[in-house]
Image 1: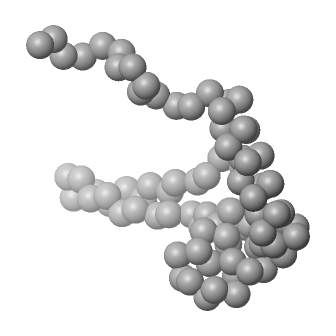
Image 2: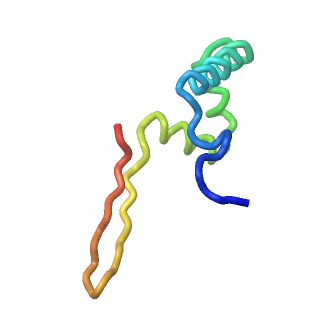
Length: 84
């Protein structure tokens, strides 16, 4: 069987599909909690560490990640920044 090449269903979703999913999620949150702010407050009230981290990273941006790379006796510091 040949390998490689494009695969059906592979790749990123289309923008319209992403926006449709976002709109569906927002409607469900509003129906369940009465509004998006109320839904966010309910999420924060769970005190679930992974959810809290997710919310804070989206609200304030991910902190910079610094990685020390040693090569040939010389240390190089690489900093990753999220696009804003």
